[in-house]
Image 1 (tube, rainbow, N blue to C red):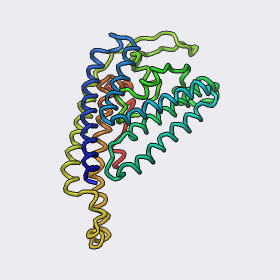
Image 2 (image 1 turned 30 degrees about the horizontal axis):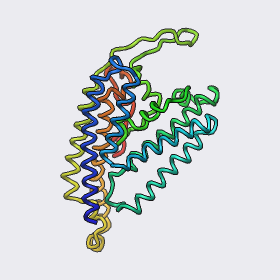
Image 3 (image 1 turned 90 degrees about the vertical axis):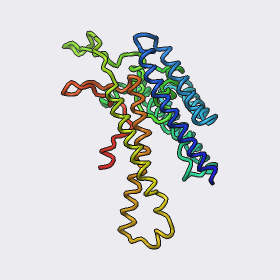
Image 4 (image 1 turned 90 degrees about the horizontal axis):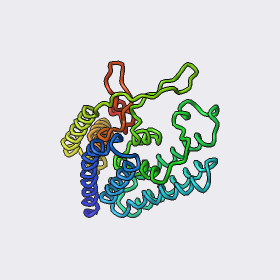
Length: 317
């Protein structure tokens, strides 16, 4: 059991190191591999290779599960066809994830080994299933059958294998997300995030122009500050009020019912910032690469919340 505890701590340190490396890689990616300086092909290749390297460094050969799950799902899309592939992809991707989760419970101590390969697989499973549905909507169903949100997300052509792997395994989101739509990701890679299309009176597209690209630095710094505060809160409070004490036999036998409830709430409040740290850092990584720009608010400030793992205030309230 002690070796599993040390393994869990080692994996968490690995995770943080990889995410900090991804943050630096994101800054480099935006500066030197900007869409105005290099082709989409190069951006896809670099994003994919960096993502697989981080996964291999963090999870070892278990990272091959990411390639196996994505590769078989892609083959299903090509072989089955657009009419039914979304159903087959859903069954396979969720089934593969389930097998990995069940296997993990029997191999590792479920209560201790928290930073493992099944976490990224959950995100990849969401990407596989959502993209399959988006392709089904865009290539099989008629526009009048779709809701407005389905029309916005619909994918009108089959992705290449490189585009598919880049979407699933890019270095910005492979370890902790967040989930993004395929169209948003491709728009970012191809450098069309800042393009605006003007429509004519007949509703057809007429002209397209590029607006000024805002800097993500303010959004990244704000999210890194949230990361720092979350980590500080977790490390200072969680050591004083450990979650494990909730099931301590002496505490259970002697504490009153209100005390148990109050301690349960406070100890879990102290435990959650660990996840806030990881998910907010993932948001910052995507923004640092230039991904996540939604537009401008009514005050003219740039909004970098197109993709997001969480909203802490809404969760806590």
